[in-house]
Length: 155
Image 1: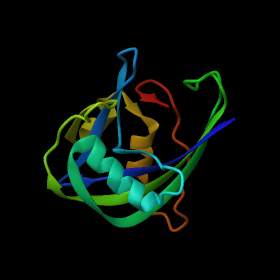
Image 2: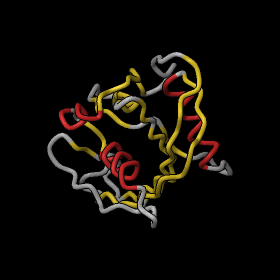
Image 3: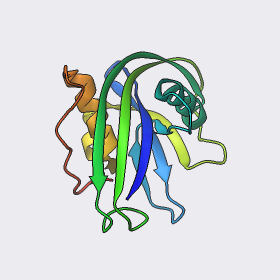
Image 4: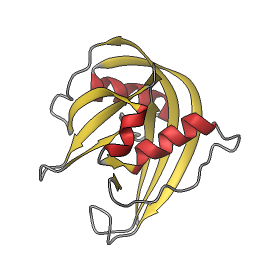
């Protein structure tokens, strides 16, 4: 089984959430939260700030930890064909500067502010729903029920 530790930013402002459009090498795309893999020896707190800057062009500060999600993606559904566990650390993040832009030499084609009510109609990563659910509920345990993957919601 492969494993990935990642940190994700939930940036909510004026009823909008900051989303990033990820594009695969084959040209397929879906919307996700800014964030990504924690580098070896890196603190997830630092990783989420780095990832926001890399993927969106914006500077950010962490307001709070909102939760942790751990999910196993069966090999039949995983990109590499191997069972994969993703542990995501979700932070409430506030944008403090910069200007939205695509990720230079990366997989993020654009970053945009999207109305929270419009998210339901987007082809998106389950990470978006997890992050919004954590931000809305702020569960004391930092855990929400798994988000089913189907239709517009992808791994």
